[in-house]
Length: 276
Image (tube, rainbow, N blue to C red; front, side, top):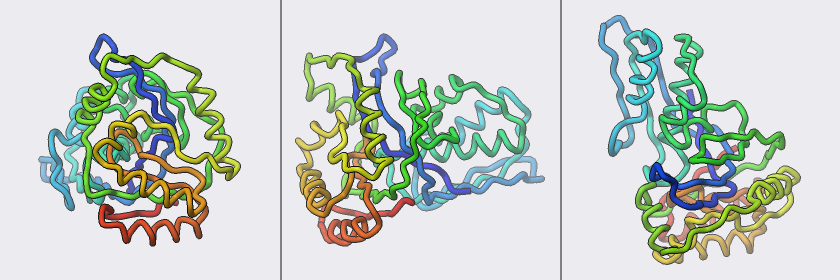
């Protein structure tokens, strides 16, 4: 099965909560990525997880899902193979998408039943990527989801620069950039609704709001180079994918063809991939 990924159409980071996490206001837009997860029962008595294409830093979310599921149901020995394609720290939720795909498999094949709160504890993006709905407005740390009824049929181009940014590092840099300033909650739901409405009607929305962009630009002004190309070529929307380093561009196919060709020639670009 192919694992889902996401971009954040809007991403506002408010103050730090008592639990140490930041309060968010964001829109998750989910599509099917190209990382593949294969799961099958095995008679060997011992399950296994094999990851190809990347060395995962830190604890594998697939292990966390299996540990969680084992506390609720009897999980049979499974042979799990994961084919990775995306760099860690890109902000597209690839690891969370791997976890979401395994959760769905366990629900469909092993009778796993779990609540949204339980899924959210596995990772900030896992809950949104485990949903059928492709567009969700989210609050909290991303666990409070409000499905959006609009449908955006535009394809994406995801562009990976030669640098990455882990989630902890991104939040640390954002806090350092802001200093003592603590942004107030505002009518971010209305802003999100307006952006989603425009894109569902193929209307230009331009550079999309993401609080992580300002500190990222201090280190990598190349973002502006890429975004200027998007603006000049007539893309409908563009921005950072999330807290990580990757960029995304939403446009009609011919525009994305031109963008992919131009951006692939930039020396700070590692790779680009089309999402439909």
